[in-house]
Each structure stands twice: as C-alpha cells, then as structure tokens.
Amino acid sequence: MPIINAYLTKDALNIKQTRVKREWMDNTFDSHAYHCFPLSLANSVGYEISLPEDVTFIWNGNNDHMQNNVEIVTNTKYCTTGRGHGTISFNSGIILKTDKNMSIMHMPVPNMFNDNYQAFTSIISTSFYDSPIPLAIKILKPNTKITIKADEPFVTLLPISLSDMSNIQMNIEDFEFPQSYFDYHNERNKINQEIINKGDWTDWYRDAVDHTGQSIGSHEVKSLKLKINDNRRSNG
Picture 1 (cartoon, rainbow, N blue to C red):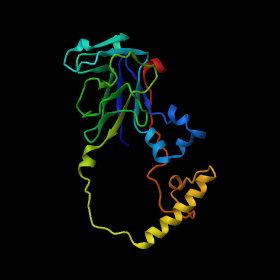
Picture 2 (picture 1 turned 30 degrees about the horizontal axis):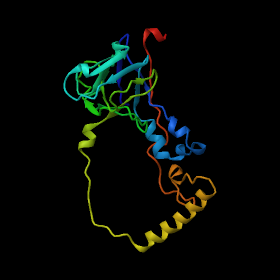
Picture 3 (picture 1 turned 90 degrees about the vertical axis):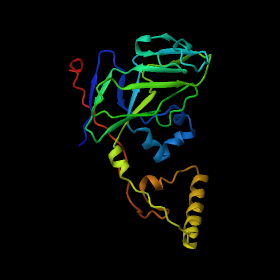
Picture 4 (picture 1 turned 135 degrees about the horizontal axis):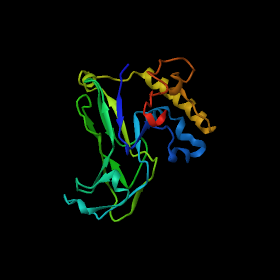
C-alpha cells in the first residue's frame, strides 16, 4: 500500500480528504448534480487544503513583479506576496514524504468554481523535497476585497505516479461505427429521455449496466476512501 508521510508544523494549514459536497451541486434541483457519478467521484479525489482562519486580500491589477501590488488584509502569517504578478503564496507548513514512484500534484479543487482566484497546478517530487509544500493562487479579480474563508478548500493535493504515466501508450486507429451501434444508441437514448421526462435518473453508468439492466463491466472503484492516521501529540 502506498504511504504518504505528512509532517505538520504548529501553524500548518488544514489537510483532509477532499469533500464530495459542493454548494452549487446542493443548489441544483433535487441535488440533481450528485447523480452524475463521474462528477461526484472526481470531487473526492486527493486531499483538500484549507485555512485555519479567514484570509482577506486585494490586488490592484498590476501584473509586474512588485509584491506590493497585492495587500494581505488579514492573517499575513499564512501567506506572502513575494512572487508578485498578482499572486499569493501560502505557508502551508506541510511537509510530505513519499517513495520515488509517487509525486504530489497541486491543483484547483475539482468542480469548485471560483471567479476570484485559482490555484496554480504544479507537481513536486516529494521523495526528496524536504520543505513545506509550496502553494500559490493567481488572483483573477482586481480591485476587489477577496476572502478565503476558514475551512474553505482552495487547493487539492493529488498523489500521482509519473513513472506509471510515462509508460502509457495510446494507439490511434481508424474506426467506422457499424449500423448496429447507431441502432443500439438510438434505443438507449429513447429510453433515457423517457426516464428524464419523468424526473428520474437512470444511474446506468453508476451501476455499470446498459438500458436493459445488463451488466457491461465494473468500475475500478465506486467510492474513494483515503486513509488518514493523525498521530500528532495534540490529537491524543
């Protein structure tokens, strides 16, 4: 089983498995968005990072290297403006150690949309990198006071194996759909539309079945549970 060792300093940011819930999904009719299995599964991928306290900042819109283009209004202990270019860097206080076949990708939180800022996507080789994980955002809205609230995820850490990825081969070949394909999908789409018109959901993909209820395969996993053992002295 792959192991990630996380070492947290006193003022470290919060880290836990990325939550499935999204406010915009809650606000869809009858929470319809959660019936999209690929969407809900992607929501729980990786570890979310959030702040222990609110952080408020404002950017004047200048994109040069000067760090005073961004003013951090509250809780400067968690972040700096040293990179300039309308960005903020966060003092994560989280050191991650993995074996050499695992890296950590920092990325925006899946399906958590934001008009004010976006986390940078980058990859760190955590087998030898011995400093706190560097996290940063690009501010998107100038001359606006923006607050990242406490416990509001703003970055996701995703463990990946670049070694496995670099060995993937994609074969591209010519293909023409036979008539049976169109007949099958026309029937499927007709039944799907009838179900939707009733206000119901098919859950065919979630259950890996076709429109007749016959199994067509299986998912690699249907839910993602990331184990976290908190061995800090302050947690018993």
